[in-house]
Image (cartoon, rainbow, N blue to C red; front, side, top):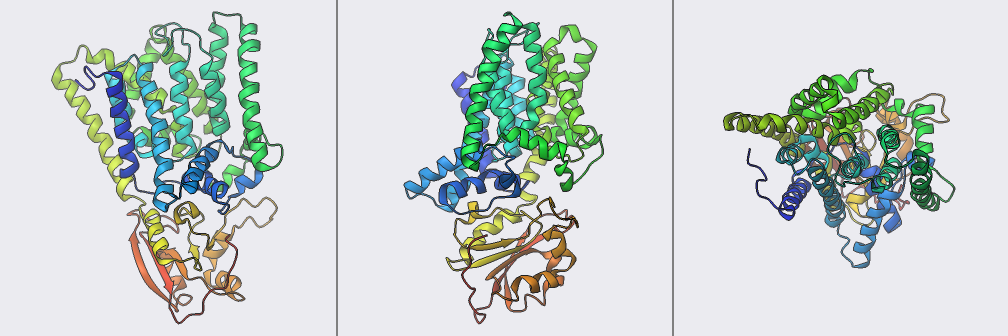
Length: 505
């Protein structure tokens, strides 16, 4: 294993940056709606005055911190006249790739400049797949990695700094506002810090924790309250809606063991093997692996708590990636000192190939259609066009990729806060497309462009009699529900009457 041998800090940082920027251009597929609807769409509305906001932004459960950073970038493009759609799509991802680079370099320094640590973090398929995405979990994961590199561990090698620095606390507060789901990690680490501090515990709490929490938290509450136009504490609203009112369950429920049997194995991929090896080593020799034991305890609490939350997703375990990669490298490094070259290259090749295959497929092939359709819509539309998306809600980006102030219509799936039926508009549409279409377009002009998955085609052919199919874009080899293999774009025939002017939805 000769990776990174003799590399200087600038060279290491350059290699990391190259890989992260490369991911921005290679990862051209759809993952989850939040990548766009919880960041880019919000930022677009802030910077350009038009856009779409989901129910989360009406209820106040999201912080404006990350969208505001992107909005500042958008505003710069706007004032310089460089707000081309391609720039609006790429530059936020490049910004996130730079943040992820800082996180990866911090992780590398935290481990003591270990070559295996660098290798594992650079080859992780899921981190390559997500490190350049504008997901809140991507930023959350980056903040976790940087904060861990600053954390004052005891009973072994310390973190990046050899003294108790409060910098990690600032990052922890930011992390909780970005995604309150990281709170269990910081609760464990904070309790550990108070118990092992060289200072007095009360003194540390009063002179460090409380002032930082008040200053950082107060600033973020002020930002969110200003943007919402009312007093809002977003972590509390997040907890109130998703936990106390269990709104998250509306978007799907999974068994308690899902993270253990599906979530974590899928995210780690081939790296699950060295991670399990590392966990086993910590459990067998806890006194020799105090840092690993602490990290494992924090990760275990995180998984245990969220296993009781019915709604689960792969991305929700992303903040644990730095911890898992630390445990993996911490067991590989001592083994590698005794292993021969053939075993070293065999392990490195297995990890590399095992990560390359899913990274290539999910980054280039799987679910590419709903992104590729956006440039096609821009080319087909004009300033008077209207577009209707007859797809499961939030299946595509919107104004952040169109960058046209035109009328759009998409199916909604807000939780039924006040409705007794519990049926969303999207469900009502797929139950009876003809009835929805008649209700929507009986008294106004039909849209110029219609976007749908090919599975729906046979059910709406009569409705689209006056349209021509202009695009048929491959999307996925694994259709599920109303999401199918191809994305279709229909354009109204020229003989059809022009649509009336509506305000953009």
